[in-house]
Image (cartoon, rainbow, N blue to C red):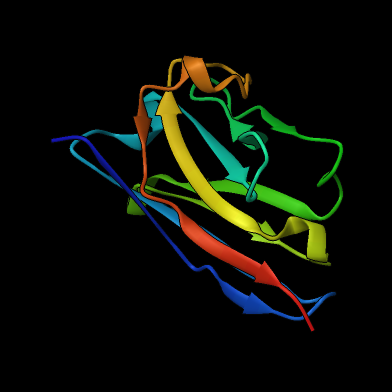
Length: 123
């Protein structure tokens, strides 16, 4: 059974950091592109970052470029999203997803989704 489980969310002050984890089971994570998405209340789901399966190429949305870093630990079958210099506008539920998407963050190209983890940036 294919499953993705996110963890690492929480409440953090502006300027702080969090590291989200996306642990996979039922498949080898590096056989798929892995994307991180977020959805704030009343807003559409937004693609934040992704890492390709083929060569580890990465993509970042302009809103997080220079602050977020995606990485993959194949031995742990886990993908991470390191989030630094967090801003209140980063507040959202963050989801990881797996699919044959290359470096696209188009949600329709992802087949498997986690349940999400809440990130709240507030003083």
